[in-house]
Amino acid sequence: MCDEIPEGFTEDDRCPGCHKFKFGPTLCEVCVETRATSPLREQIERQREEIDRLRQENKEYGISFDLYDEAARRAIERWREESPEERELVMPDHSKLCQWLMAKLRQTEKERDDEMDLVEEIKKALERAVRTEEAQFDDVWDVVAILKKHGVIE
Image (tube, rainbow, N blue to C red; front, side, top):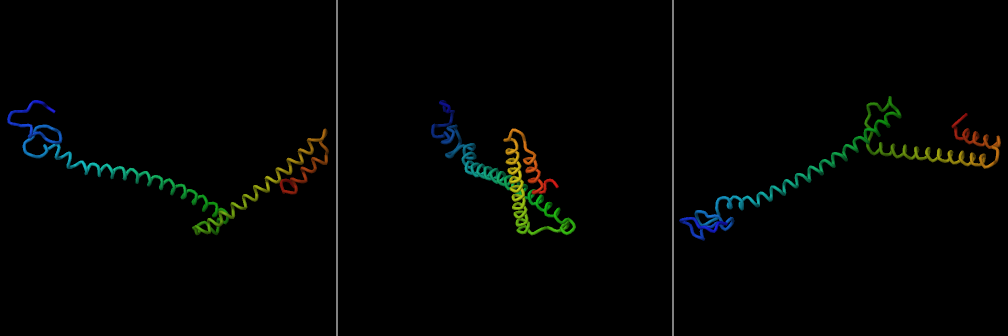
């Protein structure tokens, strides 16, 4: 704020906003424009923030959709591989595809559990064979019998 009052002005001629000297009883032109647009600027800033938030949300939805779409594509591909001549041009119903996938999951888990049981049986038979000073021929045949029982060898 300038201490010197220009010629033709009084202290009452100062703008209440910026304290510069002005002509007339209201705010100077700069303060009128600034104050008038301040709420508008705040609204624009809020809208920009909302746009940024929505863009981020849209990006996250896009990522989720891409993950879902890729998983569905792989599931349909596996479903078609099971019976290619019948299913090549067929799109499965989503709920039936999910049921099919769950059945495949249960089947795979059972196969995994059976293989783990086989590994445990072989491990126990080998531990019995190693515990003795010399492996007995019968211990080796126990391992072979386990492998034949599970169809690993014929």
